[in-house]
Image 1: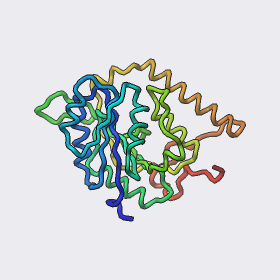
Image 2 (image 1 turned 180 degrees about the horizontal axis):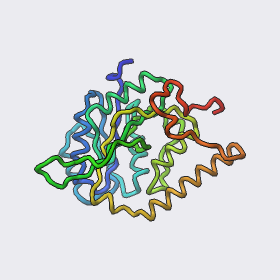
Image 3 (image 1 turned 90 degrees about the vertical axis):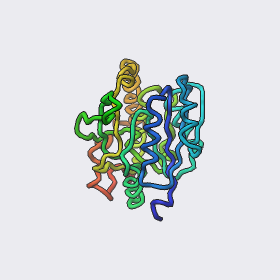
Length: 255
C-alpha cells in the first residue's frame, strides 16, 4: 500500500492558544503529504480561538467542548478522526516539513510497528517578529512526546485512550501502558517535532505536574506487580532505537 493512500488525522487540542494556533496549522499544511485531516478540539478557550480556527480554512474540522483537560480533548479528537494513522500536535509546537512523510513510510515498511517516534528539537521563541521566531536551544532529544510520534489507529485499541482523570502526564501514562502491553514502537533518528519554549508554557503548575507524574509511575508499578506477581522491568527507551528494527524489542512473546 502506498503511503499517500493512507489518511492521517492530526488532532490539535487547544486551550487559549490563539497566539500559536496559526503556526501549528501552517506547519501541518506544509507537510510533503497530501491526505491530511486536521481536527482542532477547543477545550473551552476564551481568547478568540474559535474565530481564528474559522479563518484557517474550510477543510479544518473544529470542535468545541467545555474545559475538561488535554486528555479529554485528545480523546474527543480520536472519536471523530477518520484516519488509519493518528498524530497529535500541541498548539504551541510545530512540525518539520517532512515529518508525516518520513514516519508514515516507516510504519508501512514495518508492519509490526504500532508507533514510530522521532527526535525532538527544543527551540526557544526569539520574541522578534522581524526575525526567525524560533532559535535552537540544544541538540535534538529522544523522548516520548505525543507530537513527535505517529500512531496506527489500532494502537489505541490495544492500549486504550488517554486517562481523563489526569491533567498532566497523560502522555507519559499512555506510553507506559504501551510499553507494558509490548506494542511495537521505534525511535527514528530524524527530527519530527519542534518543541517551543515560551513564557506561557513555562508557567505551568510544576508542583501539580510532578504530583501527577508520580501518580502515573506508581500506577504503572502497581499494574506490573499485579500482572506477574513481581515487578516486571520495562524495556529501556534505548531498546526501541531504529537500528534495532525489525526485531521490535517492545514486542513480547508472552503478551
